[in-house]
Length: 133
Image (cartoon, rainbow, N blue to C red):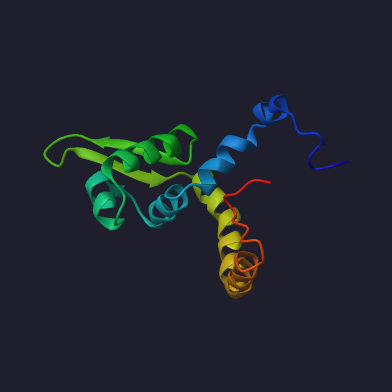
């Protein structure tokens, strides 16, 4: 059995329940936020200070998506210390256990990947990864 049927249609992509979650894992901020929240709970402002160059709008959106997927839990703190606190769920921690080996692999092969990119970028004809055939 093939992992991916060929041809891959738009309907195939739409029916794949893993696609949206894989996009979340591949985005710029979600895994970083999840890794922080797996260590301990954070308040919103605390997360905002903990991750440089992340706008509050993008932080809010990423946290909502992680919460929607069940990877992060949001708790409203009432009273004098009112605020919101976020923490990774067991599901989020289990996802991290799958993603961390991928990150480790990327670090182990960083030099090889960098060299392959340099070879590709220096090929005659000036091919660029953003240029389609």
